[in-house]
Image (cartoon, rainbow, N blue to C red):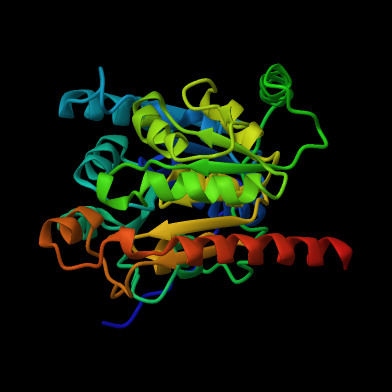
Length: 359
């Protein structure tokens, strides 16, 4: 079926964007927001998002208002979803855009009753109500490109952007500086960030290999900093248990999401799984080495010039969710990525970064 293109005037409108995915996903839509803001001159842009990840976009200058949706708490039910949609509808939105269609986004849209609705279809009935229905092909693109295709279909010609970006505040920066200072870290120290966890155990490169990677770069004078949430502490302790170096910083569970974004920007190098922190490190300009197993490196890889994705297998590009891939068992485990390859990638990233600084 041939792609349909539209000619939509985005200027001087009230535009509502529904996108209710996770921490890293909120970072991945920053190029979309940058282009939308540039094209939608004089418009007010509102973002409906998962309330848990507000700090990821709290200071993004391309959003005028965040509408938090507590979809895992008090607004979990369909009745609450409909109520929120009616509340947003009272703002008389001119345009509603959905980047990741779901049953919930469909319900919000129907309750909202915007003047115009476009984007990715969430259910089979969406196309009956949408003015600009789209099915975005994802077989040969990055997530960033997928979302930009929505704007392209709406008639936007200039899709130039600055890459994935996160925005912090003076308060978050101060909290990060205070945290490092309390752990004896000076501005001159070179830090290597490590995020050993992810949303799914199968996406985690072995913790012991993270520990050995940290040791390698500690021997080169860098200070390992372990980031993460409290539930990842057992994994981090496993990584630390194999380390020879005793100088490292345990940041897991000690920083808010925004403070982590600020602290991540201080690192000279980072190692992660396919996770939210991967997007954050990359968005902060940190050379990032990301390990992929059952998830798709082609769709999610870091974009920085000194970043690299290492995958345990060449996953066919497609729409299947990572959980379906895991359930099928038809993939090569992430543990097959060798320690040597990861260290080599890290050395390359550092050298490339230094080369760029000298230019």
